[in-house]
Structure formats: structure tokens, C-alpha cells
Image (tube, rainbow, N blue to C red; front, side, top):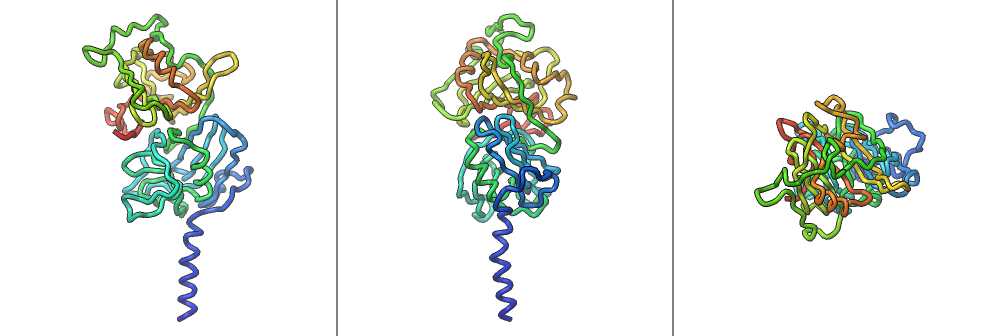
Length: 329
């Protein structure tokens, strides 16, 4: 019986190590489709600085990491199983905890946790069997999770999708331009949040931290969050018949000629949306009050994320299920 006991003990000890996945990156020449469960590729030197984005592709159980629009990592993942499917949509990192333990599932360890929603969805290291097996979280290899945790920051954009999506870099000054879609001066007196106000700006509620701007063409609203706290909101004017689809943008600094550099991350299917136009000019169809626009521009910096949708601001509207942003209320 002793050999059996020893074998069982050896297997028990081996299981956690297997669950951690590969200890180092596969060759950067490895075909992404050939990565086995637990394997990953990481080459941060390709883009040492700049805003980061993670795209989780559910059908292939892969996650892709972009920095400054350049892909620096790919990993196998394990997402939510039947009954606990990982929600699709655009999220930002709300909390980071290297040694987190689950509050929902028997204090289970969730190393290098990066929270996407306050109801339990996160990126973290975990078991990678080669298929969806989590309770909704996105599990990654331990070594990859550590690299991502150390390289990322609060407010990083995470896109979870069941279709292909690739970032596209565009240079433009169109975004947040203080004019109407017809190119005339914006008149803030035409729109109001209430009888007394057209827009609201309270930056003192969160003096510092990552900035996220949420835009809904359906609600005709834009809301500005800093460090997950609302610091401003305004009505916006939308060109007749225009729907922006669902997409994310990241500010990546200014070019030498002074134009703004944004990284666009359109979700699949947006091309077929009603009234959709090319993402390089889409923002010209949206205008904000000039004073509010000036205030918003004052808090934009490298890594600022814009989440745009024609659905509602909280979980989607008119039956749309895409999550646009999840913050602490």
C-alpha cells in the first residue's frame, strides 16, 4: 500500500505545478494556434512603454496583450464554463491584488488578480485545462499573470469578445472636437442635464488616477471617471441616424506635429451597425459643449481610455448584452 500512498502524494504535489502553466515564454516565432494549455509568449521589449490593452478571445481560449498598439504577449486562458460564462464587452481594471483570495468560492487563491467587475470577474493565475472551466474569471499561466500584473496599471482596457478584433492606430484631432457634426460652433444652451445645468464637472471627487471616458450615443451622454469615480458628465449631440457601435479608444500621446494619437479597438460587427462610418472619422459625428470639452481635454493623458457604445451606459440597452463599463457605484 505504501507505493500507492507515495504515488498519490506525488500526484498531489505535482498538480499545483501543472496548474501554474509554463514557467517561461515560448519562442516568439511560435504559432499562436500551436500553444498548448498553459503556454504563452511574452516579449515586452517590442514596446517598452505606452498604454496597454488585453483582448480575450473566447472561441480560441487565447488572450492577446498590446502595448502602444504593438502585440507584446499571447497566452492560453481558461474562461467561464457553461452556467458561468465570462461576459463579453469592454472593461477596465478596477483593482489589483497580487495575493487575492476569492470571496465567493471557499477562499480559493487568485494570484495576480486584476478585477474587471465588482461581482467577481477578474484576470488571475489559475488552472488551464485547455477549455472553459472557470466560474467566469479569465485564468492565465502563473508566469504570464505575473508579467502582466507588473506591466499593467489601474484603468487598463480589457476587451472580451467571441470574434476577431485587432487594434488600429490612427492620428487625428477629431476626437472631442468642440463643434457640431456640421462643423459649426456648439451651443451648450440647447441641451441640459437638468433645468439648471447642461454639464457637471467635479474633479475634486478624484484628484488623481486613470481616466476613463464613457460615451453612449443611445443615451446621448458622456461620463468621465477618474480612478473609478465619476468626475463629470454631459449631454452630447449626435449626428442624425448615427450609431457608434461599440469600441474602445486609448490616448497614446501627441505626434510631433501636435495631432493626437489614439489607438482604436473596434469590436467585431461594428461595420454593419446602422449609420456606421470609418472609426478614423466616427468621432466627428459627436460634439460636446465647448467648456466641458476643454475640461475633459485637461485630464486626458497617455493611457486615457474611451469606451463608446450605442447601447446604454449600464449593461446595455434595448436588449443589448455588451457590458460597457463596470465601476463601483
